[in-house]
Image (cartoon, rainbow, N blue to C red; front, side, top):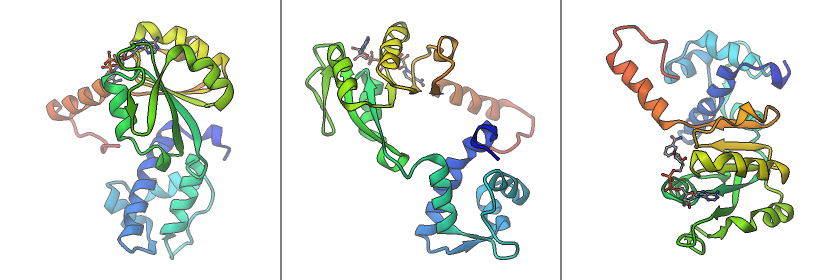
Length: 216
Ligand code: NAI
């Protein structure tokens, strides 16, 4: 199956498989059956087999999966075997927290620059990166060619900065603003993050009498 035909829900499960397999590897597992993996992850064995079948044959009938090999294959599918340069725009409360607490390298990225327009934060160090003036972003992009940007600026500022970033070759956005990038740019990759949506989902689970279909 080509990568483009893989459903979003399968893609969204892959990081969780990757994380679980990493934990199994750390705990000394060499092989695992789809049934055992399903039990540990709160899924069904057929769901797991179906998911992995989207990408080819990973296991051997009756032998289960080789944990390290499967983790490596899923890592490759996720692109974690390469490191992509990434910049962060907006070094406010959220931007600082993300820059300080996300392990970018283990997710296939390297944070190479942080930009803000506020003189009060320009020059601050976050980890080993100094916050630069947003006016330097164009020349930085021309030199360093980051392919991805994290948006932690107000929604009102997003449109202009996104246009600038796209014109400098950025083609993927980890978007924390509530600006809908896809409306104007259909040819880029966007991962919108809305912590509030996650909280509302928790509210649904807490308050609903309905059985939900698992939590992934
Ligand atoms: P903040 O006000 O602490 O930080 C925003 C930073 O962006 C400031 O340092 C400001 O100087 C900078 N900035 C503004 N315009 C800029 C521009 N054109 N270029 C460069 N820098 C610029 O705000 P906070 O709390 O960090 O939130 C940032 C964004 O994230 C907001 O859009 C907010 O709504 C959103 N947010 C989203 C969440 C989510 O779950 N998706 C959760 C929390 C905040």
